[in-house]
Image (cartoon, rainbow, N blue to C red):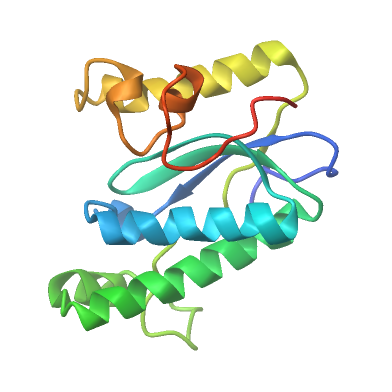
Length: 177
């Protein structure tokens, strides 16, 4: 029985995805944890053909629009790699309260791990038209505005809104699809 109605169906279109930190814990309030995500995306762009069309990183989740050959496996590897790197960083920085919560909220079936950083799945939604692409990018970029963090989407540092506003972003994006 499938766990979710969300499925990847082919590599020929980009997908809108959401990845949530376990129990919505605020892991991405530290720039060094966000840099782990960005570095991983950069590596995937250079070595695995990731086409990153848009993203936003908030304190406890992220949204992205991306495409790549073998995208489901690529996203699993992204989550696994970033989880290991972030947990290592939190341990080195002795952020014990957060680590204790990541251990407490770990799912029982994850018996081989001490911590669980990411919720399972990425809720992929296939983007098949320019209109849907624009809607998803607009949703992503306005997320920090709706939360009251900034007045304009391009003011949020960890978002591709800057790239689309003609300003330098923190990572290259692919505006064509």
